[in-house]
Length: 150
Image (cartoon, rainbow, N blue to C red; front, side, top):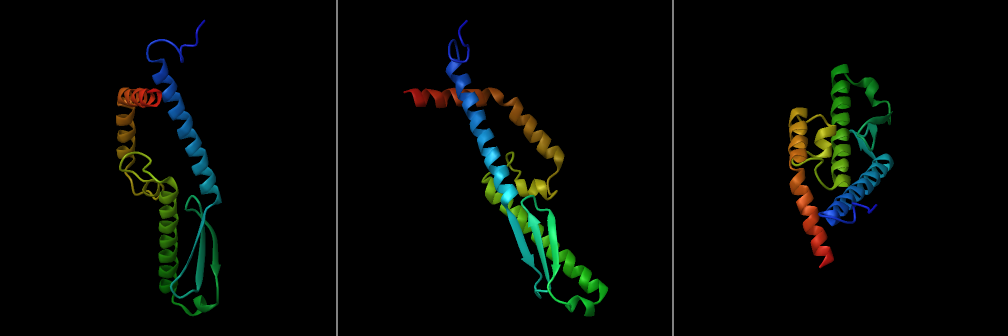
């Protein structure tokens, strides 16, 4: 029996779709490796506090670099902690966006998604729109395969 991915109507288009999927998988694996290796370190403006975030923007280490915090009012210390952690997460999410190099779905960046800045209904709607538009993706793959052959 002939392999239908290579023969018959649209066979080369199907191969192109599989090649695109394989390439996307490779890119995803590469992205995940970069995220595992990434870290972001920020300091408070007064250098009293350092925070380290992993590639997912999660706090992994918090260090008091001196004892200045002992003389601070509780509200002042709390504000310093919150602002430093907020800035660190924002920088970590910015790195995620740079590593990704593109939106996770049109109009939605990895950083915004990870930071909870995106309405999940918007993401699901965008994914559904992409799935509904599968025929145009197949046509584009066939067109790309035609240019590669000729």
